[in-house]
Amino acid sequence: GDPVVPREIRPSSNPESGQWLSYYEDAERQDGRRFWAQEVRPDAVPQLVGLQRPTEFRADSSLGWQESLLRYHRPMLEDGTIEYEFYYEPEKCIAHPALDRLAFILQPDGVRYHWITDGPHDRSGIPTDNLFSEPGTQRSNIVPLRPGQWNHLQLKLRGDEVSLTVNDQLVSQRFLESTNQRTWGLFHFSDRTMLRVRNIVWRGDWPDRLPPLSAQELFEAEPGLPEFRDQELAQSFEYDLAAQEFPGQQVAVLRGAIGEDFARINDGLRVTCRGNRDFQESTISPMLTVDGDFEITASYSDFLADPVTSGHGTIGLVLKFFNQPGDEIGVMRRHLHRAARSREQVADCSHYQHFDAGEREMLFGETPAEETDGALRLIRKGDVLYFLTAEGDSDWFRLRGMRTVTADPVPLHGLRLMTQVH
Image (tube, one colour):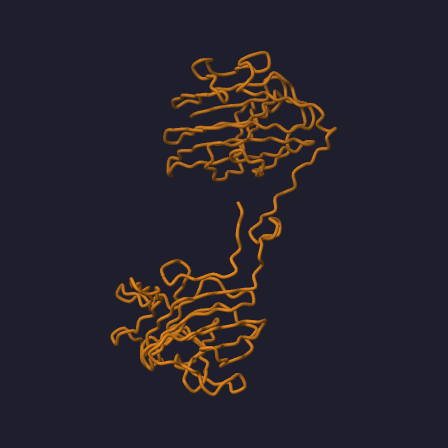
């Protein structure tokens, strides 16, 4: 894709949008009633509303005032500004900004600060109605609040310094404590006032483009795949099932019936495998042997399986060695119908060994895989085999597993394209 990094974001005014988290979640859900809501009117901008808590919903008054905090899901990791409009009505409606546990309490005669507690679960002993002043942080003796109107607030963060501007007047400027996690939110004492906010805009000094994939936070480095020089894989074999003769001198049918299980179509070979409770296979094999290091890829499309309970439908790229212990190794795309679980679409790897006393089965690298078109790949270098899959026509192969295997040549009829049901 072509991702675009926005220069500003406009957080939703809907507290149920998934962008917002109520800090006092239990207290905000009394009797099934929520105290954060969105108000939408046909002729007005949507508002985020913090409702005033009725008397019967107030917490224990001995604890102090009732704190209510709605936090945005992402902290201010970079320098930036957050702006919003809030409605002000003295002693009835106001919205105070907060960073982590620090709330900036807007009062006509200046900004005071409130340390946000854990309410009834708090063990610090700090009352919920705590307010304190820091004269050195005041930049104005008044906060120019406009009663009965929408007021504009800007919170600006530069390094560790936060500045607060109300209606274009700088009112507070202070440094944040080193422990402040910079989660920002909207705060009010819900037993005393309600809260109304609209037109939230966040502009940040975040990068204007995505970093390279290897530098992204969620990138998971995979073990390095082998790299071959041109002369190391000097020979090649390619067989196009859409264009070349089938069956013929280059490909043999090992299991299945031509015309019934194998049918030529415009863009390839349609392989069908019908089964019962036993294993059934439709399998073809190129007429060649493979010695030394190699890279083998098989592409497929329109994978569809309908397995019975405890069964599976599988397509696989398989190597079978006629050695002792009869190694049979492959990378698969499967549709599983587990007995105790629902149906699952996966990619996985397998290694079977056959002994006189029985069979040893090793399955590994199972990963969810929903693609119906894709490719399976096996790479051997020395005695290490790499199992890979790709989605659709992508050339980006994901490593599904690695295994130490025999370095013996792959014998005639040992390289197989298999369709299997059970």
